[in-house]
Structure formats: C-alpha cells, structure tokens
Length: 220
Image (cartoon, rainbow, N blue to C red; front, side, top):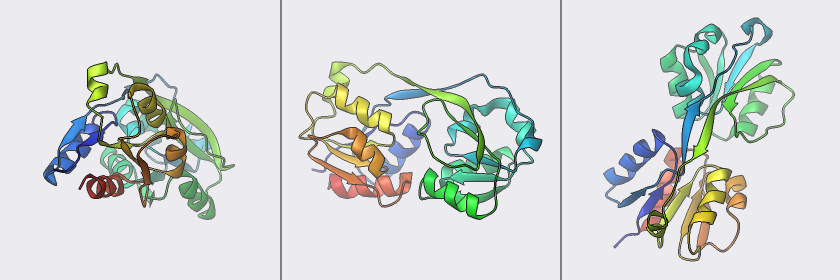
C-alpha cells in the first residue's frame, strides 16, 4: 500500500493540491499549518514604478481593492498560479517565471526594469535586488493550532513543505522525523527543515506540479 501524502500549505492551495493528489489515486493528509490573512496597506503612487513583482497568488487574493490602482503596471510573477491570479484580476503579465524569486528578479532586471514594486507577505524571504524600489506586505501567514493527535497522523507519510516556516514548524510538531520523507520546494526550504528526516527530496522546479510529481513517486 502506498504511503499517505501530507499537504501542509494554507487554504485555498491546500484543497487544490490535495484534490490533484487524490485524483492520482493516492491517500492524503490535509493539515494546513498556517492561514493567510489580509493586511491593511496604503497604495503608493503607481507613477513611481515601472513594474509590479508578485511572488505569491496570496498577494492578489488578499490585496483588496487597492490593487485596482496598480492595474497599469506590467506584472512579473513567480509561478503559473500567481500569473493566472494576476491575469484574472486584470493585470498584464509579461513574465511568468517558474525558477524562484531570485531568478525572476534577475530576468526582470535583464529586461530593463529599474523601479519595481513588490507586493508580498509579511513573512517573506528576503531577496537581494536593487531593482525593487519598495516592498509592501499585503498579507500575513498565521500559525494554526495542531493537536498531538493530528501531528501523529504524519508518521510514515510523505510531507510536502513549501516554505521555510512550514519546514521549521513541521519539525516542531512531529514526535519523530526518521519515518517521514519531505518534498521541499527549494534547497532553502530543505535546509530550513533541519536534519533527522528519513529523506529530503527537492522538487526539480519550485512549482506545485513538480512537488506533486515528486510526492507521488515517493509515495509508491
């Protein structure tokens, strides 16, 4: 019998990922470790910027009506889901990178962008780039309570971790690590998970599709 796959990301992504895994005939554990909430923010003058950087679809989901004032800025997005969310809102997406934020920023700089606005999460990972003129947090990820019984369900599973915070928190809530295999979205997330796990596999690309593919292979 195949191993269960633990989906730990917040909603609504948790439901989407879990459905894709169930459609492949695998058993899942749905255990969001965080929930995302909108933050109050002041919309800056869009004339100060030549592009909008989006590294999560949550920036669109929780950005609110203020996003409408930025609709004229071309969007450079990380991942298909983020790009699709921006298009649905009405933005013109000119770059849709699937190799992480650092690579996206390098591509955007090479394209001539010099004064980008980055709408991000409060707990974002710092990225070094001189082209980002301002970063504004528009959402936050708050921890959800996890009972000992729920944490015990993770024993023997393949767990998908999509952020450094999720990797670190998973290590805090489980009783033992040596029978849990992790699928990490990036090398940085794998490092944040620490040692002692049965195995850590980094997805070939930082995308939900590649994480699901890796988890399915490991669950067999």
